[in-house]
Length: 436
Image: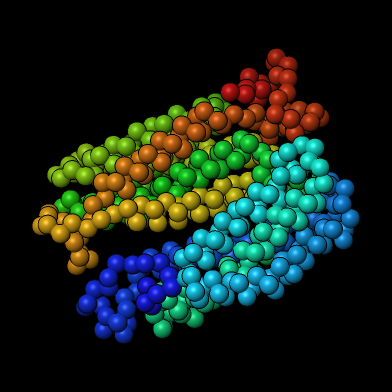
């Protein structure tokens, strides 16, 4: 960071770096925290105006007047007046860390409350939940909007502060853009509103689990060299492992893509693929802590890429199948965006669990500091991979909605169940009606 107090606590800065920034060291992780605040600001702005582009449809669905719908946006402006003063005090007196944590919690709580009318059938007076949830999200708005300037001052050197402030500030109008583009795409009729408020259980399970997998793979790619250099592996070997990870991943994706195109066994393929990915991830967590295992490590990284990347296109197809008739771009895009957000959290968590060794070692790391112990973070990464795989295997069940619609467009595709297609209607009729 680039300041003494008011933000996240950091290790004591190295003496050799103090002269560079006038006594402070700029940590590379400042960009990660800037991304966290930017995503929080973007999501808060999206929540603010998510109802406005589809106001008439929302009004009909919940039996509300247009004036009530307008208040769902106006409440942000009303609440920001008193909460703005409190936000200033929180940032200056309590600090950026707690302000960001509080803003994220309020954002989450408000989102849950405002989704209750769509998640619980027969909710009395839905406007109370909608307005209450929006009001809580509005409390988070000032904390989020004021944070970029504080982050830039505390974490960034003088020549990067304007850029950091620009990135954090512009993420808010980006959220408004997302709301204006995404809400009309997701909500074409009243029946589509539950889709906008994440009532589709199968899609949620897939998004969280596969999104977690994206986060794990992003963290693996970013931290691979740091993990291997501690036990004496060169940066050239780490680069080779990363290359094998990608090359075999592409081969696996091509092979499994061709297989599911012929068989339509999407659900079976992704569940088996994620289980094998978990085994490879556990193997990497163990072998990466050993010395002199170049051949085994190269093989494990190849298998991790082969199984992990293979399920990516299958997951994208399933995202479309279980959320149809939502647009393909929105269905697949939201999974990827969630994966990026989970990736930030996972990487911050993994790096925060590392500790430095003072004793001599075989480390080839070139950061000029003591070697890091990655045992606990790698075991946690493997544990998360296993957890996401188990959740998807146990909880993900869905009919193939798009394939059903293409086979027989006349019946409703909104239900979770439908009778099997008449025998002989299509060559691939068995898998159209399959619901694991």
